[in-house]
Image (cartoon, rainbow, N blue to C red; front, side):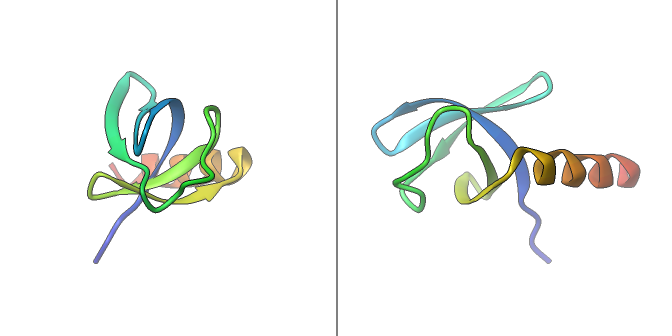
Length: 69
């Protein structure tokens, strides 16, 4: 089973970006999302941003994930 987590995109440098969720910040590869912009919410799996999501959807996903842990 694969799990992708929604993060907010903070900065972009070439094909790399920094994302944040709560107090967690990570560097991710943006090669699959060349149209990603700072402020977008992206789903991250295995170090790659794989899809953009709306802010409301990201918040709903995070709420669901918080009930699991």
